[in-house]
Amino acid sequence: MSTSKPVNLLDFDVDGLVAWFAGLGEKPFRARQVMRWMHREGCDD
Image (cartoon, rainbow, N blue to C red; front, side, top):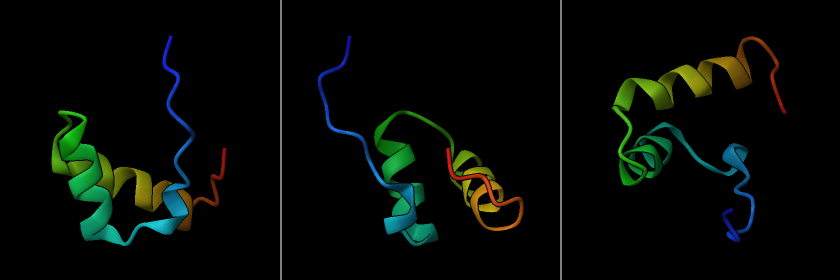
């Protein structure tokens, strides 16, 4: 179980989110997917 604090993804711009996802070992397109879901689809949870 992780004890790290939650991260507010809305605090990131696209480049920051790409870097954050890269730090998790994810590919850059994942960051763009999440950004699109948050801003186009209105997902916030």
